[in-house]
Length: 69
Picture 1 (cartoon, rainbow, N blue to C red):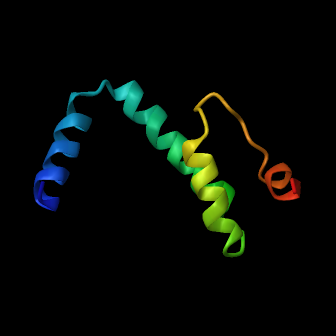
Picture 2: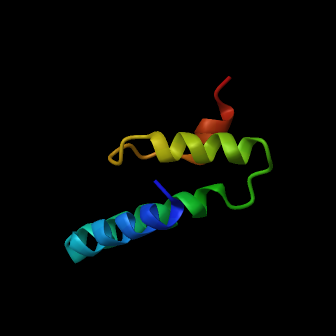
């Protein structure tokens, strides 16, 4: 699949979702970006992956993630 086809597929998929679902998705992304802001690398990348892969209902405190061994 070309990158253009992938982008078209993603845009089509997003256009079919209810507005509430899209808003929830964008809010989650905003929250993730806010949590990694100011975190130094490589911790930033590690935290980003962890937050993205975490179940949506899981609420992480960025400090508690960094304090774990």
